[in-house]
Image (cartoon, rainbow, N blue to C red):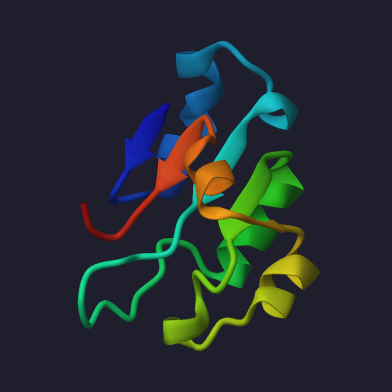
Length: 99
């Protein structure tokens, strides 16, 4: 598993070469942030739409975006699968804001 804290588009465009797996086989997990007073989420629904268009599978933990005003329905509409915490952490790439 690769945990990413800061993401830019060049990282995702070169990740295929790093991992040796096609995009369609890679899972990006987005767990809910648990630090006190943390309202951010590592990936917005717009980001999900971009990643799924490229071919990634995105799994977002239930209510991960609630504090940032992004509901589960918004993530589903963008192409993500809403999952339990363990499934979000089981991705090939895990996006987090904090540690």
